Image (tube, rainbow, N blue to C red):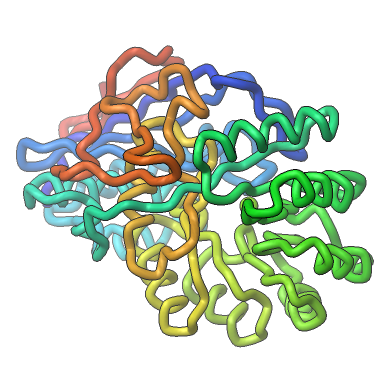
Length: 370
Ligand code: MG
């Protein structure tokens, strides 16, 4: 494809209810939306980078800079570049997987649209129902957490992921398990623990969790492997696997029995599919993790979540759980309680509404900036 325009837009959406992880409490969420044009079509993606450099070093501002100054101009200068070749084009740019992943994902959407087929099929998945999981943040009290989980269970969500950290782990998790014994629960630590907590974390075994997600920081695979060998509960990796190579290393060490695939973290949809395929061969179930995605990102994640080894509930819940207006049409909604399904396309099948507050925008073309 001969890309002739790259557009960047920062848009802010208000959350339907505040969300708190171990770093901050959110009332709004600003995302970077990218667009690529070629051959009369437009592909879109939502960059997974956040406003802050806590989950990952990238932010929407660093992603904007790297795309505007490097990735975008390189793409515009290339005569023929698509989702399979763009990473080679950008190989001299170190890291910045979330910035690269945003543009690469937009190229996948564009290619699917030009082929007139749904993005899920372009990736190797299919238009099929996908089970959906919810995430419950750290709440001021256990009662508020229970109310939040009750809402998710009542709405039909098929599992809940509880954010945990030292001081907020066994007690809230035990209460949720007692109140909702049938609801599968993942405890997600976002790397809040270290090797000194191994003994403490093994006590989570008695709570019958579906998984303990990302207990330790990124560069502590041997400790994670030791924990997995000592725990019956599956360890699920998130922040620790940024590529197929890192996933292979984690599997070789026996450091996990589940993987949460986030497109941005691993540098786009192509690498996500390769990690999915590797995990399928190893018997490691996977799901798609979200980051309070607005509509464009939510429909993209749903396409990936239709791949055959995505057997666990993915973070692709109805958008009204998260936002009053998520900036895309149609709104992603349950097709039946606990299940969603992709649109028939082309691409994600979703279009921007243009109703969100635009903080900043920029267009790059072959002829120069606008
Ligand atoms: Mg996680």
